Length: 177
Ligand code: SF4
Image (cartoon, rainbow, N blue to C red; front, side, top):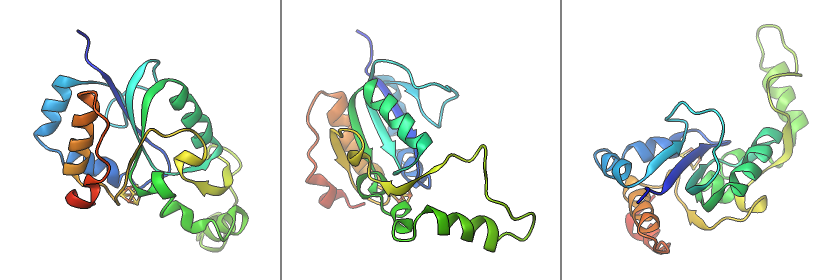
């Protein structure tokens, strides 16, 4: 029988949730035997594949590129997990929401630049007016809160999902974040 296809995605986050994922340590080997990691910042695959069973999405939806990616991910994923507080609430990326993208870019690229100040017109994806939690853009099946969620919580949630169970979301209070 083929193993469930697992993916992890990094949108507008600091990668701390993925660091916590790595903190599962030796349990990663067990997860690797039970699931096939088909897409992740941890592997060298460029395009999000079809038929993903479980995807952990770190980070908020903050740019047009994030928006395009999360819509593709949703269409190709059976169980989408909002992974960490930036995905669940927009958290740190959402701190720029009262300011708006214009003043934010001006501050970052003009006022604080010491060399060649200019607003980016290419390569840097265009920002959305506000940074959004993932569920504001696409349907989310499981919410995994914490900044970052603890390795124990990530493991327990993945264990449930790979066993075909609905994760016990109340356990986040027990495992801490
Ligand atoms: Fe980083 Fe915390 Fe956001 Fe995770 S939830 S991406 S650890 S700021």
